Image (cartoon, rainbow, N blue to C red):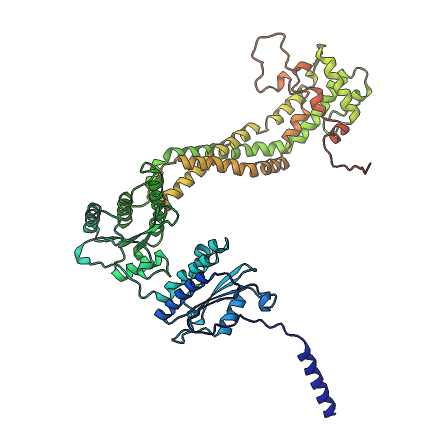
Length: 591
């Protein structure tokens, strides 16, 4: 039994060993020291290879930390598993080569390219874990490397990667410009971008503010973060370091201006940031930071289009002192002031809403009465309609047998009614409805319970007040959180109000129309059924009872007094309705 089990085990092991294993590989290591470039894909000519290798060797000799460059033709050429991507292979190669710095801190770096797979990766040693360098490394690829590799400029892309990684290995302690509180010099122009006269004038302005408030305003200029050993952090973080290093009190504000020269033109860019004390947390901190990009844009337009379109550097630094003084004195948004300068539009909105809502509330009792009595009016209207039609039947059994209701008429009735239009246009037919005087009075009473006019006024009031309300909201928002001062409704607020009204109306309007159509209390139905009698003098809101006119009869009906023709009152036949739309099917084929 034991011999049998042993035989089976040996056979199973032999079968497994006979299955080919697709193990990944890496190009051979260099045979000599000081070679840090492994160009297995052959992307570099000899002079480019030597230049990159010399740069990597120089970095290694100065820092004891190697940067290794590896290029391969493809993952397939190295028998890598199909599901491997750049990160997996780069990490595999890093471990296979056993790349290590001289201090054994696991802080070496591998730069990797797979040519045919069009992939690039920078792998950092495990010693960098926790230093949060992923964002910086990614920015090297996005901003410095990718543009070159996209054009198959391999040397330029690899050179940019090495140069971008150099600060990680070579930068020492962050350098902060000297500042002495006793000098009362608040402008530290380390980048030499301000003239002496401008510095003197700015210091005078800041000194006056500091004397009155005991809160300092410091303006620092630098050329780049790299010259301050701060390439790995943002400009905001650098200025926070400056704030802490100088020991600025909670009411102090430190501004930073950094010059960035363009590689593609003669223009230069300014980056502006601010670091403020804990006193300014909240709206004031947001206000100060919002001004930075406004000033950056102004400086750009000043260079590109002239001072009429933008600002000079001195004008911007002067603005900095004004923004700072505003924050220090807490001279911000005051709701009372905003209400005062926008009192007219506020009163108009309140007035329109009061009128609209007030009329709607006032009409509610009438709406309820109308809903309760409309069926009575419909029944009486049908009786009078039949009475009128009995005088117009002209021997037509269809018209004489009509039930007096326009809704849901038969096709034969519709066609018969249409014939009356042509006939009565040329005949003067008068029909006295005085015997139905009581019914007509009741119908008129119920009909006048409709609140259509007040509803129109309500809708008009809301439509007018809605854009004005949006304008006020926009003005309030800009005043309180951005400008930090009360502002009147401006052009931007007006455009926003009109645009928002049109935009929202395009979506809300149709929905509102459907909704109000669904909740209609029957006024439209009654008006349609009263098409024959709405033209009666009795139905007018003001009668002529006080007029001395012996020939005036408020119960006299005639065709020319009708509010609508028989054609429009009776509606469309079923065939006409069907012919107005498609989608009912069809057929066809080859020929």
